[in-house]
Image (cartoon, rainbow over all chains, first blue to last red):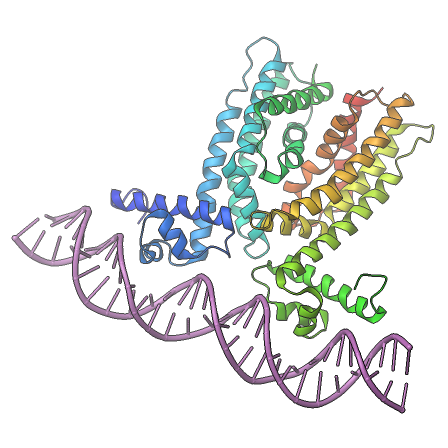
Length: 208
Length: 208
DNA sequence: TCAAAACTAGACTGACAAGTATAAAAATAT
DNA sequence: ATATTTTTATACTTGTCAGTCTAGTTTTGA
């Protein structure tokens, strides 16, 4: 039943169910959402949901895993642009910073964090999926890039992991309150300001 | 029925119910916790819970509000220690930073954030209570202190609010991942290191 | 001391939702 | 073409839980 052996039509429905489940769970909460509603949103019969996922909890797990995977891909794409062009590093960092902020402020991204926080107490293994598969991976790739920039003499740092911690804290920390925990959309201008301010502090500490 | 007019014994039970409700909701989630369980944990009959709070949702609101109030008080007490002693500012900032980190890592504090995130989608007005009554208040008081230190020439900053954003981001940002969203206890030594690193970056950007 | 208010234990109702069952229809594979 | 798998609609079972009710007990205030 995996992605390679299953019939193609089956995977289409599976994806539709996952997307619908994530959307409904995010909107009304896991406990408040019935499997019937997920099925309706996916345009599918309830029995089909059970045929694919067995029970509601598995559905939640898979939906979260899929969403985390998607979010990770977007983050990695943003980090991809952090390359040494020879010119001034600041505008490049600001650009990447803004893109990471945009990832963080995506509706799905807020929804993912909400679901994760909400169900963490009663499904602790979700942490494994999201922390290890997503967060740490992004952190590692970003640390690699920073290390390379330091080696080329464009940054002054000894511990790339510490620098990543500070960089992402500076970028995402201000977002929680300003975006009112995902209930308010930030204007693009505000995002740029936050990115610029974050990079400014970062470069004071780690710039050459 | 407020704190001043209600019989004294009544308030004792009320507090017991609030504390038990917060603990149970935090441990197993709001939807997964029955009112019976809260009553049992509080050592009280179920009818008494309804007598005090009317329904489960009100109980949640009041429990969160009470917890937010307590958390705010602890934060403000930590900030209280940020005063100009004439000597070096760094150790004072590190001390206050460590205390703020300890507030943030408190079990109740993690539980509060989890509950807030979890129920935000379906009770949006919780934001009002926590954001306005707690978070913004702490931020304002801290900004006042930083402004005063800047005026005395110990910090170099134009926008105290921006500096507070960065300071608290640097202090609390690294905690999410390290404490695994509240599921892991941080050793005291690690907290001190995080505080020292955060203050170091902060002073590079805002120190004189 | 005595009346009013608050509390208790327990049973009860009613709604809601997870998961199953069934039989027919659609898609798919060989 | 036909056998197999998947999907659908619908009805059903079952357990859970918010909130109510009752009747008796404790606490409190004056």
